[in-house]
Structure formats: structure tokens, C-alpha cells
Image (cartoon, rainbow, N blue to C red; front, side, top):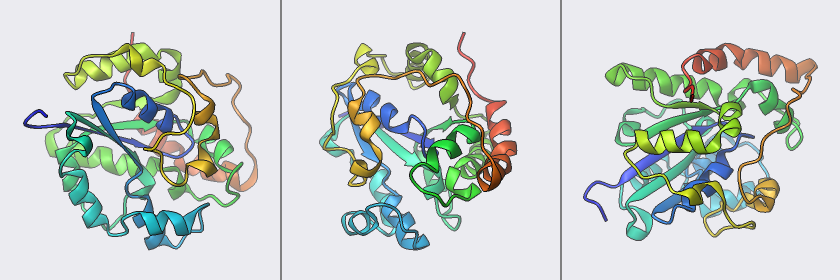
Length: 246
């Protein structure tokens, strides 16, 4: 193992390409992955009734401080790269963000209209805080205040148009070699999947690579449209700073 392992924290919201991205990095061969390590703590703190809630809490770590210590500790498998798939909305508002300074942080964003349209297919109740974009903005503000730099911000719509170009750029940013295996992976579940996978990962289990989304944007009405609109300013602020890959 290298003296200082590379810890990549990909901060996404739900119903994005976050699990496919985790597949991509795990398929490098030199990379450990962690699937939503703050999920159990999030459910325990909020009391939300997500699919598989009891099992997630029973098998996960419910103390955010202990999760943080693990994420900054030894890398699973003693590998040189550790890819941490995070849901930004799992971050407790009370948790200081200084610990993320020990990670290479990337923000993975998606149009809130598309997020909400997908989200309500599985859970009818949704509020702006569920989308993660407000927490992504908090992360951005913290990271900019730290050193004045904008972390990589990737819009999944752009990424899916040119996955290889984006992955090559991200690997170069992290001083890593790009590996073609990041573009294709075997179908099916993985031991690294969270225990919630049977409830959410059907499409990823069928996949063998990144798939381009439908071009037509969904139309939202009522409360769903209000939630997406409430997240629009934060998303637009992040999107204005996103990577543009030529």
C-alpha cells in the first residue's frame, strides 16, 4: 500500500448514477469501495422509514463520529485507493465538516426535476432535504472556504454523454491512471453493495456499463414540482461551476 492512500469521496444525491459510478471504480482492481457508510446513522437519527430500515441500522454504524474515524482509518483490503460513495443528505447538519478535508471530494449533481421524478416512484414522500443538493452546496461552501478552490463538480447528464472523457479527466485530477475497465463491469450484485441493494439496485444489477438517459425531461406537478423548484437555486449554483469536458 502507498504511504498515503487516496481516499475519493463522491457526494451525490439519490436517484443519480452514484451506484454505477461505484461499480466503475471497484472495477479498477486497485480500489476498495464503501457504499453509503453514513446511511445507518442517518436513519437512526431521523427516524425515517426507508425500505430495509431495521436491517440497515442493525448492520451499520449509527454513530457518525465512528463512521468518520473508519473512513479516515485503514483502507479495506490494504488497497491504494478507497472510493467512498456518499449520499450528501446523509450528512448530519450538526456534524462539523472538517473531516472531509482528509478526502478528495467530488460532487455528483443531477437536475432536481429528474431526481424527484425518479424518487417518487419508490417513496411517495419527498422534501427538499431528501435530494442532497442543499447539502452539496454546504460542502462546496466549506471546501471553498478552506482553500478557495472549487472541487470537481460533475453533472451526471454531461457525464453520461462522455463517460470515458470524464473518467479520464477525473483520474488525471487525482493523479491516477485511467483504466478501461472503469467503463464496463459484470452484471449482478456485489458483496460491496449495501444491505438496501435489493430495494434500490435492480437497474444497476442489470447493467454492464453506463447507459445514456432518456432525452425527454419528465413533467412534475403539485408537491413534487414544488420540491424540485425549491432545490433549483442550489442546483443552478453548483451547475454553473461544473466541469465542462471538451
